Image 1 (spheres, rainbow, N blue to C red):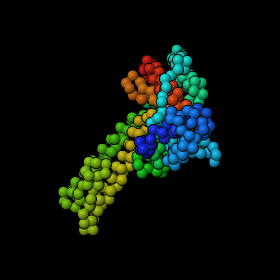
Image 2: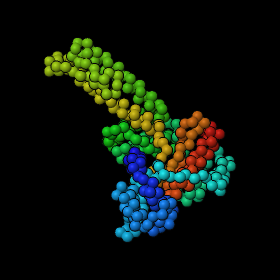
Image 3: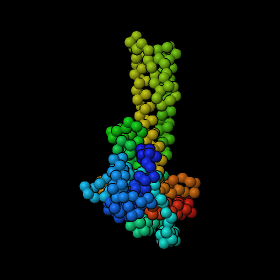
Image 4: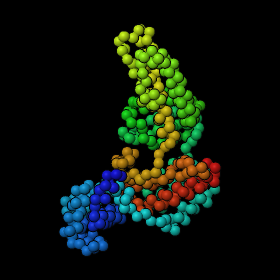
Length: 353
């Protein structure tokens, strides 16, 4: 996080250590950490009054918060994010945890769903959190597609396949899109979706875009050659046909112009839908979501630690994760999730998934 990195670079060693100790204490106990507790663990011997002053400075920076007037401090969401991104010391997977995860590889489940269910159960038991296991993406005929806006920068695509399988994928929508534009995109795609995969739909949209571009070129050529119009940003997504002296155009030229404008509108709409399809195919990357950063869990104050797994071609095909309170033991959970994701990837590669 850029803001957190800037703040961290401006902090001295004393402030960094006090901040780190507060966060580690909170993640360990779930309770506010007081100045007197810190004075016993700091590398530098400081008075409780000095520590309180440092904690007040950290509170002013938005990194710590005081839940009660006379209580100690807890990290804010911004503080947790900065800690996870810059100060977190990730441990190794304990031998006992590794053995329990590895044991899932010994199951003889041929059904991928049953296999992932075993892995999810093991991960939940080890971390004492709710496990999240996303199955490999299905390339099957689509029955229905729906786009759901979660925020200005996050959206969900719900894919219902003809075989009854349902997938939810998170993505970042193109700038400027609204819930209504997403509904329009979904309606357009659902009219074409029967019997087609996502790849089929994307190829179809590319063909539609190329066809519209040819029609525009054909209609606009005479206008451009006669000097009545000129291309702006030709060949780019922001291309426009600039008309000169429109008031003096003959009526038939005006009709061509309306046709060009209509084709441009259709071209832009299909480009937008093609963008949605591409984003839906790509899915999401790796991240630790903390509290309200994740719109799906913000109301419950939860955190999500998720890691993708890949097939033999190094292509991301799914993800595993753990959902828990924001005071997760990130140093322990992160390597467990990462190790599990690597194991699942190997297992999927062996099955040729």
